[in-house]
Amino acid sequence: MNNAQIHDPTPTSGKTISLARRAAAGFSLIEIMIVVIILGALVGIIIPQFNQSESEAKDVGCDASNYGTLRQISNSRSINGVYPSRLHTGFEADAATGAPMGTSDCSKLAPVTATNLVYKSTWVALTADQAASLKAAGIVNIAYGGFGIDAGFVETASGVHVASVTSTWLEDHDDTTTEVTINGADLTDYRYDDPYTSTTVDGIVVPLIAAPTSDFENDYHGSTDSKYPSKISIAQVGACPWVEKGTEFPFYVCFFKVFNDGTPAKMIGTACPECGSLNP
Image (cartoon, rainbow, N blue to C red; front, side):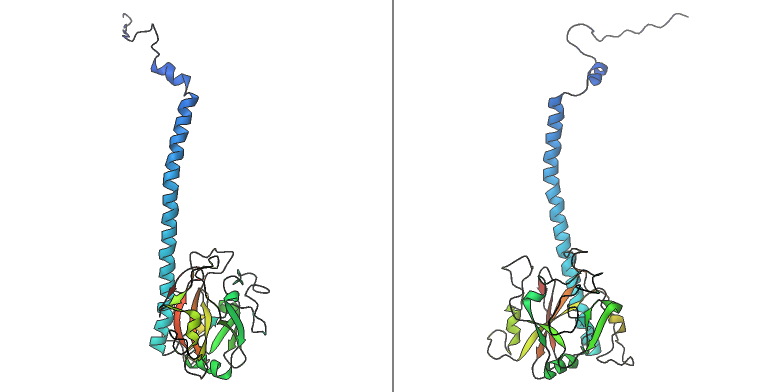
């Protein structure tokens, strides 16, 4: 059998270089630099879009969790006739001087730091009528120290310490300008009988914390007696996505107007520790 002959019409002379030889030669430095520049430009365009999407997702998640907190606390009052008990003060213990949570035996939890709670408040002892105001609203116990089963629960009474909002509450503790307002009024204005005219001080504004591990499962219906269990299960509370886990404990703040004459306290709104607020 004769060997088959294959004719290759590709010219082999002059400056023409075959594809195989060109591939073997690799890319030039200029070509590689062009590719790198193009990839860099694409990254510069795409990454900010991802960052913006993440920020928007956190905003949506925060609003949802904040609203969930507001809804659960408000639903508890609507169904039980009182607010849930066992909300947290954000402080280590009921003492003459308020130490933010996380300074001693609760160090396993990230602290509620001075920059996101304490500096906006004054540590005060409740008067008998102010304690009666909270208890009449169902808040018969408040928590110190840890959360959940680790918290120290104290029956609301005269002399028990809480925080009292005495200066402008800021939306972000790194933001020195944006105030938290509820229905257009600064939080401190709710100390007055009419927050829009600021005429007569008739109470204090107490921030109490609702966190994912608050012990609401063992809460009772405006009482310390287990014969009166809550008629509603509280499910969606806390867990702000903006708060960095491991450095701060995720929570939402419930602001209560506590009356000096014993009138049942009223929740005036909730706020994320990092941004925004909601009205009840």
